[in-house]
Length: 420
Ligand SMILES: *Cc1c(COP(=O)(O)O)cnc(C)c1O
Image (cartoon, rainbow, N blue to C red; front, top):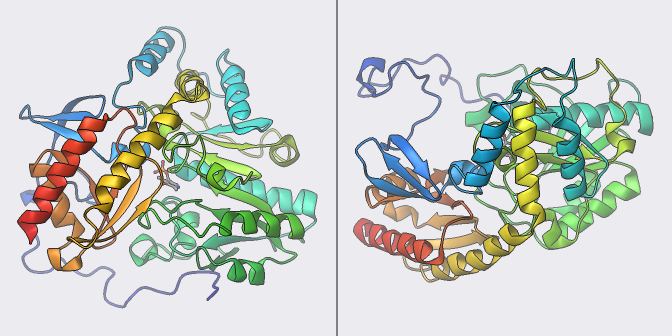
Protein backbone atom coordinates (compact mmCIF):
# COMPACT_ATOMS: atom_id res chain seq x y z
CA UNK A 1 0.00 0.00 0.00
CA UNK A 2 2.83 2.39 0.74
CA UNK A 3 6.13 2.69 -1.00
CA UNK A 4 9.07 5.03 -1.23
CA UNK A 5 9.86 4.61 -4.92
CA UNK A 6 8.11 3.03 -7.90
CA UNK A 7 8.79 -0.55 -8.86
CA UNK A 8 10.86 -1.17 -11.96
CA UNK A 9 8.90 -1.21 -15.21
CA UNK A 10 8.27 -4.35 -17.23
CA UNK A 11 11.42 -5.85 -18.74
CA UNK A 12 12.00 -5.34 -22.43
CA UNK A 13 10.29 -2.01 -22.63
CA UNK A 14 13.44 0.02 -22.50
CA UNK A 15 15.51 0.41 -25.62
CA UNK A 16 13.26 -1.87 -27.63
CA UNK A 17 13.26 -1.07 -31.33
CA UNK A 18 10.05 0.22 -32.91
CA UNK A 19 7.53 -2.58 -33.48
CA UNK A 20 6.88 -3.50 -37.09
CA UNK A 21 4.33 -1.19 -38.65
CA UNK A 22 5.12 1.81 -36.48
CA UNK A 23 6.02 4.74 -38.76
CA UNK A 24 9.65 5.75 -38.85
CA UNK A 25 10.68 9.27 -37.94
CA UNK A 26 10.57 10.40 -41.56
CA UNK A 27 6.93 9.39 -42.03
CA UNK A 28 5.70 11.61 -39.22
CA UNK A 29 4.31 15.08 -39.91
CA UNK A 30 6.76 16.73 -37.51
CA UNK A 31 9.99 14.77 -37.98
CA UNK A 32 12.05 17.24 -35.99
CA UNK A 33 9.79 17.36 -32.96
CA UNK A 34 10.63 14.88 -30.19
CA UNK A 35 7.93 12.24 -29.93
CA UNK A 36 6.92 12.75 -26.32
CA UNK A 37 3.40 13.68 -27.48
CA UNK A 38 0.98 12.17 -29.96
CA UNK A 39 -1.17 15.14 -30.98
CA UNK A 40 -4.53 14.97 -32.74
CA UNK A 41 -4.25 15.80 -36.44
CA UNK A 42 -5.26 19.44 -35.97
CA UNK A 43 -2.67 22.15 -36.70
CA UNK A 44 -3.52 25.45 -35.05
CA UNK A 45 -2.82 28.63 -36.97
CA UNK A 46 -4.76 31.18 -34.91
CA UNK A 47 -7.07 31.21 -31.91
CA UNK A 48 -9.51 33.53 -30.18
CA UNK A 49 -11.70 32.97 -27.13
CA UNK A 50 -12.81 29.34 -27.06
CA UNK A 51 -11.98 28.69 -30.71
CA UNK A 52 -8.90 27.46 -32.54
CA UNK A 53 -8.62 27.89 -36.33
CA UNK A 54 -6.45 25.36 -38.11
CA UNK A 55 -4.08 25.92 -41.04
CA UNK A 56 -6.87 24.98 -43.45
CA UNK A 57 -9.16 27.68 -42.02
CA UNK A 58 -11.43 25.25 -40.10
CA UNK A 59 -12.66 26.34 -36.69
CA UNK A 60 -12.60 24.00 -33.69
CA UNK A 61 -14.19 24.55 -30.29
CA UNK A 62 -11.39 24.10 -27.75
CA UNK A 63 -12.77 21.93 -24.95
CA UNK A 64 -9.34 21.20 -23.47
CA UNK A 65 -8.17 24.77 -22.85
CA UNK A 66 -4.50 23.67 -22.78
CA UNK A 67 -5.25 21.49 -19.75
CA UNK A 68 -6.77 24.47 -17.96
CA UNK A 69 -3.97 26.91 -18.82
CA UNK A 70 -6.32 28.84 -21.11
CA UNK A 71 -9.06 29.50 -18.53
CA UNK A 72 -9.71 33.02 -19.82
CA UNK A 73 -9.81 31.98 -23.46
CA UNK A 74 -7.20 32.37 -26.16
CA UNK A 75 -5.66 35.83 -26.28
CA UNK A 76 -8.00 37.47 -23.79
CA UNK A 77 -7.85 41.19 -24.77
CA UNK A 78 -7.20 42.43 -21.23
CA UNK A 79 -4.31 40.00 -20.70
CA UNK A 80 -2.85 40.65 -24.16
CA UNK A 81 -3.04 44.42 -23.52
CA UNK A 82 -1.16 44.03 -20.24
CA UNK A 83 1.50 41.95 -21.97
CA UNK A 84 1.88 44.42 -24.86
CA UNK A 85 2.17 47.29 -22.44
CA UNK A 86 4.87 45.46 -20.52
CA UNK A 87 6.67 44.38 -23.73
CA UNK A 88 7.20 48.07 -24.41
CA UNK A 89 8.76 48.64 -20.96
CA UNK A 90 11.00 45.91 -19.56
CA UNK A 91 10.61 42.12 -19.82
CA UNK A 92 13.52 40.49 -18.00
CA UNK A 93 15.92 41.70 -15.36
CA UNK A 94 16.65 38.47 -13.46
CA UNK A 95 16.10 38.67 -9.71
CA UNK A 96 19.54 40.27 -9.35
CA UNK A 97 17.69 43.59 -9.68
CA UNK A 98 14.19 44.62 -8.69
CA UNK A 99 11.43 45.38 -11.15
CA UNK A 100 8.45 47.58 -10.42
CA UNK A 101 6.10 44.71 -11.32
CA UNK A 102 7.09 41.94 -8.94
CA UNK A 103 5.99 43.21 -5.51
CA UNK A 104 2.53 44.40 -6.73
CA UNK A 105 1.95 41.01 -8.43
CA UNK A 106 3.04 39.06 -5.33
CA UNK A 107 0.95 41.26 -3.03
CA UNK A 108 -2.15 40.73 -5.19
CA UNK A 109 -1.63 36.97 -5.51
CA UNK A 110 -0.91 36.54 -1.79
CA UNK A 111 -4.11 38.42 -1.02
CA UNK A 112 -6.13 36.26 -3.44
CA UNK A 113 -4.85 33.22 -1.52
CA UNK A 114 -5.19 34.77 1.94
CA UNK A 115 -1.46 34.29 2.53
CA UNK A 116 1.58 36.52 3.14
CA UNK A 117 4.14 35.62 0.51
CA UNK A 118 4.70 34.39 -3.02
CA UNK A 119 7.67 32.53 -4.48
CA UNK A 120 7.39 33.13 -8.24
CA UNK A 121 8.52 30.41 -10.65
CA UNK A 122 7.69 29.51 -14.26
CA UNK A 123 6.23 26.08 -14.95
CA UNK A 124 3.95 23.98 -12.79
CA UNK A 125 6.59 21.33 -12.23
CA UNK A 126 8.93 24.03 -10.92
CA UNK A 127 6.28 25.20 -8.47
CA UNK A 128 5.93 21.61 -7.22
CA UNK A 129 9.72 21.15 -6.97
CA UNK A 130 9.95 24.46 -5.12
CA UNK A 131 7.13 23.44 -2.77
CA UNK A 132 8.99 20.20 -2.01
CA UNK A 133 12.17 22.10 -1.22
CA UNK A 134 10.34 24.60 0.99
CA UNK A 135 8.55 21.79 2.86
CA UNK A 136 11.81 19.92 3.50
CA UNK A 137 13.57 23.09 4.68
CA UNK A 138 10.60 23.89 6.91
CA UNK A 139 10.74 20.35 8.27
CA UNK A 140 14.39 20.69 9.28
CA UNK A 141 14.38 24.33 10.40
CA UNK A 142 10.96 24.57 12.06
CA UNK A 143 9.61 21.11 12.83
CA UNK A 144 13.02 19.76 13.84
CA UNK A 145 13.14 16.65 11.65
CA UNK A 146 16.63 15.06 11.71
CA UNK A 147 18.63 16.08 8.64
CA UNK A 148 17.97 13.95 5.56
CA UNK A 149 14.95 12.16 7.09
CA UNK A 150 12.06 14.30 5.83
CA UNK A 151 9.23 12.50 4.07
CA UNK A 152 6.37 13.84 2.03
CA UNK A 153 3.12 11.91 1.69
CA UNK A 154 1.56 11.84 -1.80
CA UNK A 155 -1.51 10.20 -3.31
CA UNK A 156 -1.88 7.31 -5.70
CA UNK A 157 -2.82 8.43 -9.19
CA UNK A 158 -1.09 11.77 -8.65
CA UNK A 159 0.15 14.00 -11.42
CA UNK A 160 2.47 16.80 -10.38
CA UNK A 161 4.70 17.19 -13.43
CA UNK A 162 7.57 15.54 -15.26
CA UNK A 163 10.86 16.27 -13.49
CA UNK A 164 12.99 13.41 -12.17
CA UNK A 165 11.96 14.00 -8.56
CA UNK A 166 8.27 14.33 -9.40
CA UNK A 167 8.14 11.17 -11.54
CA UNK A 168 9.89 9.38 -8.67
CA UNK A 169 6.61 9.37 -6.75
CA UNK A 170 4.26 8.79 -9.68
CA UNK A 171 2.53 5.41 -9.94
CA UNK A 172 2.01 5.79 -13.70
CA UNK A 173 4.52 3.44 -15.38
CA UNK A 174 4.57 5.62 -18.52
CA UNK A 175 5.68 8.57 -16.37
CA UNK A 176 8.47 6.86 -14.41
CA UNK A 177 9.73 3.83 -16.35
CA UNK A 178 13.24 4.32 -17.65
CA UNK A 179 13.93 7.48 -15.67
CA UNK A 180 15.44 6.10 -12.47
CA UNK A 181 17.26 6.23 -10.13
CA UNK A 182 14.39 7.77 -8.23
CA UNK A 183 14.43 10.48 -5.57
CA UNK A 184 13.69 9.02 -2.13
CA UNK A 185 11.63 10.65 0.60
CA UNK A 186 8.08 10.10 -0.63
CA UNK A 187 5.38 7.83 0.72
CA UNK A 188 2.39 7.11 -1.47
CA UNK A 189 -1.08 6.15 -0.21
CA UNK A 190 -4.37 5.73 -2.10
CA UNK A 191 -6.15 8.99 -2.97
CA UNK A 192 -9.32 9.63 -1.00
CA UNK A 193 -8.42 7.17 1.79
CA UNK A 194 -8.20 9.04 5.08
CA UNK A 195 -7.32 5.95 7.12
CA UNK A 196 -4.32 5.30 4.86
CA UNK A 197 -3.19 8.90 5.33
CA UNK A 198 -3.62 8.61 9.09
CA UNK A 199 -1.46 5.47 9.12
CA UNK A 200 1.60 7.03 7.47
CA UNK A 201 1.94 10.59 8.79
CA UNK A 202 4.68 10.41 11.42
CA UNK A 203 7.28 12.58 13.16
CA UNK A 204 9.37 12.81 9.97
CA UNK A 205 6.47 13.79 7.73
CA UNK A 206 6.98 17.37 6.63
CA UNK A 207 4.06 17.62 4.23
CA UNK A 208 1.07 16.01 2.61
CA UNK A 209 0.98 16.94 -1.08
CA UNK A 210 -2.37 16.53 -2.82
CA UNK A 211 -4.30 17.61 -5.88
CA UNK A 212 -7.72 18.50 -4.38
CA UNK A 213 -9.26 17.04 -7.54
CA UNK A 214 -6.98 14.80 -9.59
CA UNK A 215 -6.99 16.10 -13.17
CA UNK A 216 -4.75 13.77 -15.15
CA UNK A 217 -6.13 10.76 -13.29
CA UNK A 218 -9.51 11.56 -14.88
CA UNK A 219 -10.95 14.45 -12.83
CA UNK A 220 -11.31 12.40 -9.66
CA UNK A 221 -13.22 14.20 -6.90
CA UNK A 222 -12.40 12.84 -3.41
CA UNK A 223 -15.01 11.89 -0.76
CA UNK A 224 -16.26 14.94 1.16
CA UNK A 225 -14.43 14.07 4.38
CA UNK A 226 -11.05 13.65 2.68
CA UNK A 227 -9.59 17.15 2.42
CA UNK A 228 -11.00 18.34 5.78
CA UNK A 229 -9.64 15.11 7.30
CA UNK A 230 -6.23 15.65 5.71
CA UNK A 231 -6.25 19.20 7.10
CA UNK A 232 -7.02 17.92 10.60
CA UNK A 233 -4.30 15.24 10.44
CA UNK A 234 -1.71 17.79 9.28
CA UNK A 235 -2.66 20.08 12.17
CA UNK A 236 -2.49 17.27 14.69
CA UNK A 237 0.93 15.95 13.53
CA UNK A 238 2.51 19.29 12.52
CA UNK A 239 2.85 18.71 8.80
CA UNK A 240 2.19 21.13 5.98
CA UNK A 241 -0.84 20.60 3.78
CA UNK A 242 0.32 21.48 0.26
CA UNK A 243 -2.33 21.61 -2.43
CA UNK A 244 -1.41 21.42 -6.08
CA UNK A 245 -4.05 23.70 -7.61
CA UNK A 246 -2.12 24.04 -10.85
CA UNK A 247 -4.99 22.52 -12.85
CA UNK A 248 -7.91 22.77 -10.39
CA UNK A 249 -7.34 26.37 -9.31
CA UNK A 250 -8.02 29.86 -10.64
CA UNK A 251 -11.70 29.53 -11.43
CA UNK A 252 -11.89 26.14 -13.10
CA UNK A 253 -14.18 24.45 -10.56
CA UNK A 254 -16.47 27.42 -9.97
CA UNK A 255 -14.36 28.69 -7.06
CA UNK A 256 -11.01 30.45 -7.02
CA UNK A 257 -9.51 27.28 -5.53
CA UNK A 258 -10.97 23.79 -5.53
CA UNK A 259 -10.26 23.41 -1.78
CA UNK A 260 -12.97 26.03 -1.14
CA UNK A 261 -15.59 23.41 -2.00
CA UNK A 262 -14.69 21.73 1.28
CA UNK A 263 -13.86 24.87 3.27
CA UNK A 264 -10.24 23.80 3.60
CA UNK A 265 -7.34 26.21 3.94
CA UNK A 266 -4.01 24.67 2.98
CA UNK A 267 -0.61 25.84 4.26
CA UNK A 268 0.79 26.05 0.75
CA UNK A 269 -0.80 26.62 -2.65
CA UNK A 270 1.01 25.51 -5.80
CA UNK A 271 -0.25 27.47 -8.80
CA UNK A 272 0.58 27.54 -12.48
CA UNK A 273 -1.19 26.96 -15.78
CA UNK A 274 -3.93 29.67 -15.91
CA UNK A 275 -1.75 32.03 -13.84
CA UNK A 276 0.05 32.76 -17.12
CA UNK A 277 -3.22 33.86 -18.74
CA UNK A 278 -2.63 31.47 -21.65
CA UNK A 279 0.29 33.63 -22.77
CA UNK A 280 3.38 32.39 -21.02
CA UNK A 281 4.45 30.11 -18.18
CA UNK A 282 3.88 31.66 -14.75
CA UNK A 283 3.80 29.58 -11.59
CA UNK A 284 4.04 30.24 -7.87
CA UNK A 285 4.29 28.80 -4.39
CA UNK A 286 2.05 30.80 -2.06
CA UNK A 287 2.21 30.49 1.74
CA UNK A 288 2.58 32.43 4.95
CA UNK A 289 5.88 33.94 6.06
CA UNK A 290 6.20 31.23 8.71
CA UNK A 291 6.66 28.75 5.85
CA UNK A 292 8.17 30.61 2.86
CA UNK A 293 10.37 32.57 5.27
CA UNK A 294 12.60 29.49 5.58
CA UNK A 295 14.20 30.45 2.24
CA UNK A 296 17.12 32.87 2.45
CA UNK A 297 19.07 34.57 -0.35
CA UNK A 298 20.97 32.08 -2.48
CA UNK A 299 19.02 29.02 -1.35
CA UNK A 300 16.59 28.87 -4.27
CA UNK A 301 16.01 30.76 -7.48
CA UNK A 302 15.11 30.95 -11.12
CA UNK A 303 16.43 33.19 -13.90
CA UNK A 304 12.98 33.76 -15.35
CA UNK A 305 10.82 33.35 -12.24
CA UNK A 306 8.91 36.55 -11.46
CA UNK A 307 10.15 38.38 -14.56
CA UNK A 308 8.39 41.69 -15.31
CA UNK A 309 6.41 40.32 -18.26
CA UNK A 310 5.23 37.30 -16.25
CA UNK A 311 4.41 39.53 -13.28
CA UNK A 312 2.36 41.94 -15.44
CA UNK A 313 0.41 39.05 -16.96
CA UNK A 314 0.00 37.20 -13.65
CA UNK A 315 -1.15 40.38 -11.90
CA UNK A 316 -3.81 40.91 -14.58
CA UNK A 317 -5.03 37.33 -14.10
CA UNK A 318 -5.25 37.87 -10.33
CA UNK A 319 -7.15 41.15 -10.81
CA UNK A 320 -9.61 39.39 -13.12
CA UNK A 321 -10.17 36.60 -10.59
CA UNK A 322 -10.53 39.05 -7.70
CA UNK A 323 -13.74 40.26 -9.35
CA UNK A 324 -15.40 36.85 -8.80
CA UNK A 325 -17.28 36.79 -12.10
CA UNK A 326 -15.13 34.03 -13.66
CA UNK A 327 -15.80 31.71 -10.77
CA UNK A 328 -19.55 32.32 -10.93
CA UNK A 329 -19.50 31.78 -14.68
CA UNK A 330 -17.63 28.48 -14.32
CA UNK A 331 -20.10 27.32 -11.67
CA UNK A 332 -23.19 28.20 -13.73
CA UNK A 333 -21.90 26.88 -17.04
CA UNK A 334 -20.49 23.85 -15.28
CA UNK A 335 -23.97 22.94 -14.13
CA UNK A 336 -25.12 23.10 -17.72
CA UNK A 337 -22.20 20.96 -18.92
CA UNK A 338 -22.69 18.29 -16.26
CA UNK A 339 -26.45 18.24 -16.78
CA UNK A 340 -25.91 17.54 -20.48
CA UNK A 341 -23.18 14.97 -19.80
CA UNK A 342 -25.31 13.07 -17.28
CA UNK A 343 -27.81 12.41 -20.09
CA UNK A 344 -25.20 10.21 -21.77
CA UNK A 345 -24.65 7.96 -18.77
CA UNK A 346 -25.82 4.46 -19.67
CA UNK A 347 -25.74 5.44 -23.32
CA UNK A 348 -22.11 4.98 -24.35
CA UNK A 349 -20.87 6.71 -21.20
CA UNK A 350 -20.22 4.75 -18.00
CA UNK A 351 -19.61 7.64 -15.58
CA UNK A 352 -19.13 11.41 -15.46
CA UNK A 353 -17.28 13.30 -12.72
CA UNK A 354 -16.13 16.79 -12.05
CA UNK A 355 -16.73 20.24 -10.64
CA UNK A 356 -17.50 23.45 -12.50
CA UNK A 357 -16.33 23.56 -16.10
CA UNK A 358 -14.23 20.46 -15.66
CA UNK A 359 -15.32 16.94 -16.45
CA UNK A 360 -13.90 13.44 -16.59
CA UNK A 361 -15.96 11.12 -18.78
CA UNK A 362 -15.53 7.35 -18.72
CA UNK A 363 -16.59 6.07 -22.12
CA UNK A 364 -17.88 2.54 -22.54
CA UNK A 365 -14.61 0.75 -23.45
CA UNK A 366 -16.55 -1.20 -26.10
CA UNK A 367 -16.70 2.05 -28.10
CA UNK A 368 -12.92 2.07 -28.55
CA UNK A 369 -10.14 4.12 -27.04
CA UNK A 370 -10.48 7.67 -25.77
CA UNK A 371 -7.86 8.67 -28.30
CA UNK A 372 -9.93 7.35 -31.23
CA UNK A 373 -12.99 9.06 -29.81
CA UNK A 374 -11.13 12.38 -29.57
CA UNK A 375 -9.91 12.05 -33.15
CA UNK A 376 -13.46 11.54 -34.36
CA UNK A 377 -14.78 14.34 -32.14
CA UNK A 378 -12.12 16.67 -33.60
CA UNK A 379 -13.38 15.86 -37.11
CA UNK A 380 -16.71 17.19 -35.89
CA UNK A 381 -15.08 20.39 -34.70
CA UNK A 382 -14.63 19.76 -30.96
CA UNK A 383 -11.19 19.39 -29.39
CA UNK A 384 -10.85 17.26 -26.25
CA UNK A 385 -8.20 15.01 -24.76
CA UNK A 386 -8.24 11.45 -23.56
CA UNK A 387 -6.46 10.45 -20.38
CA UNK A 388 -5.77 6.81 -19.46
CA UNK A 389 -7.58 4.45 -21.84
CA UNK A 390 -11.20 5.34 -22.40
CA UNK A 391 -11.52 8.40 -20.15
CA UNK A 392 -11.95 11.87 -21.64
CA UNK A 393 -11.25 15.14 -19.94
CA UNK A 394 -13.04 18.40 -20.74
CA UNK A 395 -11.74 21.76 -19.51
CA UNK A 396 -13.05 24.38 -21.93
CA UNK A 397 -11.99 28.00 -21.53
CA UNK A 398 -14.33 29.74 -19.08
CA UNK A 399 -15.34 32.16 -21.87
CA UNK A 400 -17.30 29.34 -23.52
CA UNK A 401 -21.02 30.18 -23.86
CA UNK A 402 -24.05 28.09 -23.00
CA UNK A 403 -24.91 27.63 -26.67
CA UNK A 404 -21.35 26.56 -27.44
CA UNK A 405 -21.61 23.95 -24.68
CA UNK A 406 -24.85 22.72 -26.20
CA UNK A 407 -23.23 22.62 -29.64
CA UNK A 408 -20.27 20.63 -28.25
CA UNK A 409 -22.68 18.20 -26.57
CA UNK A 410 -24.51 17.66 -29.88
CA UNK A 411 -21.20 16.85 -31.55
CA UNK A 412 -20.41 14.56 -28.63
CA UNK A 413 -23.75 12.75 -29.08
CA UNK A 414 -23.12 12.34 -32.82
CA UNK A 415 -19.67 10.92 -32.18
CA UNK A 416 -21.09 8.47 -29.63
CA UNK A 417 -23.71 7.41 -32.17
CA UNK A 418 -21.05 6.88 -34.89
CA UNK A 419 -19.03 4.60 -32.68
CA UNK A 420 -21.90 2.32 -31.70
C1 LIG B 1 0.03 20.44 -15.44
C2 LIG B 1 0.21 20.12 -14.03
C3 LIG B 1 1.47 20.20 -13.40
C4 LIG B 1 2.73 20.51 -14.17
O1 LIG B 1 2.71 21.74 -14.81
P1 LIG B 1 3.73 22.05 -16.00
O2 LIG B 1 3.54 23.51 -16.27
O3 LIG B 1 3.32 21.19 -17.16
O4 LIG B 1 5.09 21.71 -15.50
C5 LIG B 1 1.54 19.95 -12.05
N1 LIG B 1 0.46 19.62 -11.35
C6 LIG B 1 -0.76 19.52 -11.91
C7 LIG B 1 -1.94 19.16 -11.06
C8 LIG B 1 -0.93 19.74 -13.26
O5 LIG B 1 -2.12 19.60 -13.83
